[in-house]
Length: 197
Image (cartoon, rainbow, N blue to C red):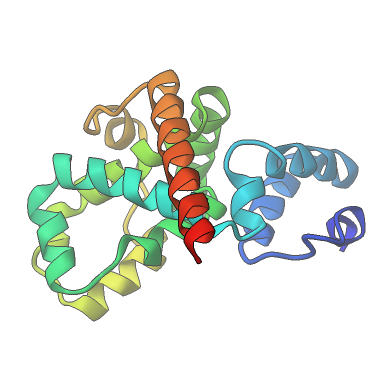
């Protein structure tokens, strides 16, 4: 409610409660509110909470590049079952994994996300898929969908080995540069299409 008054243009958006709840676990109410405001005005949160589809599609595209590169068999399996990355990636990013990981594990992810930035969220997503690749490859569409949304039942151990030993991804500077170039290219394509409309 407080944030809805602070930013009436955004109001409540799905998954905000998971972010706020995590901060309230560690902070007093007013301090948690200040941290929440700072968090959702940084990284990818502003554009995703505002529903800027083109930017979210860029993130899906970037994630799929790493997904296909590091886990080609699982990527092909998901495609065959028609499980689109958009289905689970939005929840993972907007809740910062508090919705799909054990709380203690998710908090470790938060620590690294606040240090490394957005690239660590992508690394965590790939690590989660890699960690359960063998299991996912044997499951049906319905079973995979269920666990992608409720991964807390699966991941209860310390996340260090799962995340740090995951397939290597780009560093923050390289990732940000790639995103900026692709965003500029997409914006130019949209502008040209509109000029011919």
